Length: 243
Image (cartoon, one colour):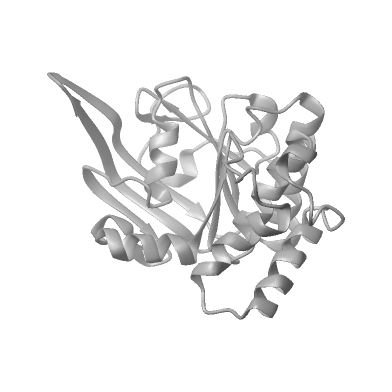
């Protein structure tokens, strides 16, 4: 049986802003399986990005647990959390977050500068990642010399280069035209199917979600099943989709 790589148990996230209390997530329980491609969907304010950020160790739950590959990320201090993210999470953002004065190669190499790899090893890893996303011929190009779709593929190569446990992407096609979006989603699908990468994306677009193996729906901080109803606590009752 496939094993869960992410185990979320009775997790809530509450933000306090002035006199207002906002419950971003309300008693979420969810398993994500190793090698799965999952889309988190829901309207604005549904809690999908908050859930992604907690899984990725960017944010912490107010209550409950988020266990990733045996580590309860909510129990780590800031230093431990930074080390954990470096080793286990590759990030892909809507706005690409590339450094404009660095080439594609230099952008991809950045995460490796925090490792003990030699310069030669870093070069080999970065070049392999760029080749994997179809940009082996764009190594020395600056972001301004590439299309939006190419920039996002550089961002995916950067996320891949450390061979992370999870690749997490927050609206990765939000700034792309339809053709570029399809290229990026096909690439993520290929990384999942051929390289068994565990991928979690946040999206509001059903077309983007259709590339995933499973769609998890949230509304007002709660999980919904495929009929728009609140699911039972068991993972088997969540809606599944096969692309």
